[in-house]
Length: 271
Image 1: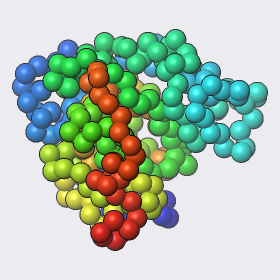
Image 2: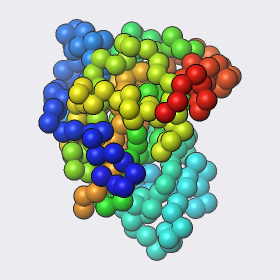
Image 3: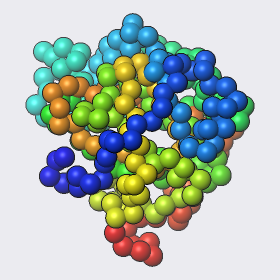
Image 4: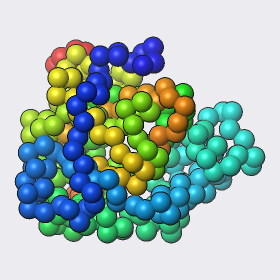
């Protein structure tokens, strides 16, 4: 782990089961999702689709970009290959409107089909899109958190995240970790520490389940599920995209309503 990531926060001795594909999500799997807060599949995108997404992300990341992008200072966009450019991306969000390949991803049946079913049959509407890029030997941790802590929607709104691996995501390079069942335990106060996160001392590490995925695999998860990813200290890339969906017609609320629930520094307790 990096110096600022407590090593005990992540364990890899328990692995999530994987379905082969989204077509394997039936009634029993939907019941499992309601209990666990997540489902994972080995194959949501094929190899050509994965490469298309990576090339599209690099295209929208090159300056001048219409998407929300932050590049490391050392990046030379005009000289970098697509993979090299993505290694230097600190932040890349709101890209599906700016490249038809990424728009197709947001409408892909392997994405919206399961999302709609996990939303109880509602029409899924994209709430957020972002790239999660961990270059070799330097990809940062995403501390434990609940995604609903970031979204200004009514608390009772179901939110489904779809996390798609664009490289093989392993225990060594920063695959997703989840705490099964925590979505059913309600919102947790978050703090601004290494990120806007659940306090390290409140993480139930005995429930930690790693979700390694091959490139093209996908994790579908509830917006209240506790999850995080350790830093990438390996020599391989770990790139992913994450899309969040809510039912059509979901209203947006003032940020203050969200923070009154999920908190910020100074809300009743300390971390």
